[in-house]
Image: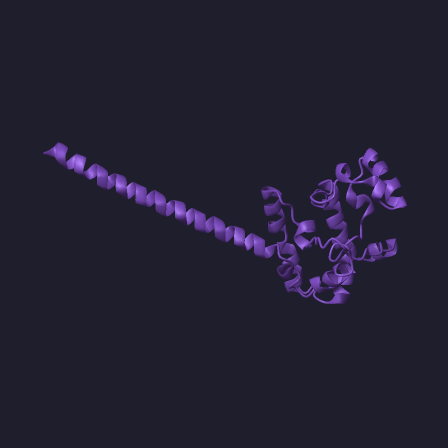
Length: 192
């Protein structure tokens, strides 16, 4: 009799395990889909420019070839500022809290305050891009895929040299999508 009971309980036990595993699986799928949706939303240009201080950048960006060009290809905020690889992307998302905090705290919430901090903010972005060998630029631009002969005279001369010297995009292209700030005078930085 004991054998009959234990054999009858096994299918019930197995069914409970399968149901539990299926619930966990579907909960994981739903969580993953939600997580990806949140990441996609926070990478959208609408989200990035929803802060008042980013309106300055948006207006500058609208005047560049990254926004509107003959081919219709557009690089948005996240294309230039958020890595596509998972762990660097997560690091960028976590560190982005400081931008939100400065907006909330009022550090950069007006165009005047924004301009006061523009050099420091730009310098940090340039240093990050230099350290990553302009990783985000290279998602679209790559020396090996450039048709140097079709570039204008200056680019045709400079790009091959930059490649030989091991230079990266940001070495020459600061201010390509946003107005390049003036470097502060030494006395301005000593006063701060």
